[in-house]
Image 1 (cartoon, rainbow, N blue to C red):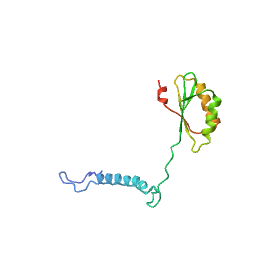
Image 2: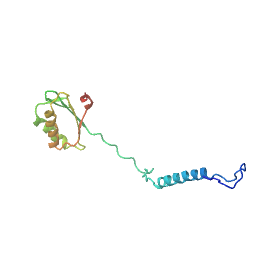
Image 3: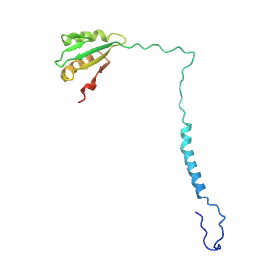
Image 4: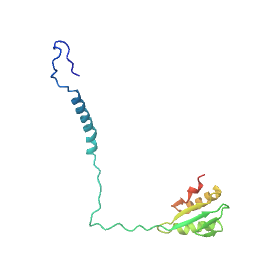
Length: 142
């Protein structure tokens, strides 16, 4: 801040320019340039598709196996009741050899025991089934 003390006569106009606001504006601009320049130098390389490239092959949607587990532990495989776990494992062995491997959509009843669900999941894992997912789990929220 400019300040005049002493020898000037009272009532004279001050002819000095107040440079404080100009310096403040210059400092703000300098800080903004310092911040924005590194952002502008970072480039993202994109590999855009070429017009002469063939389109990607159609993705085949895998077959879906619907497994339902009722409250009493009954397993339903694509709408048919499975009599025992050995039969279910035979189904899994056949399905595991397919390419692409089918997805298992596991839909346990909310009253089904955890042990029954764990037995089915373990049987699927033992027989090399890789894609297992729970369906309709929103009904388990209380």
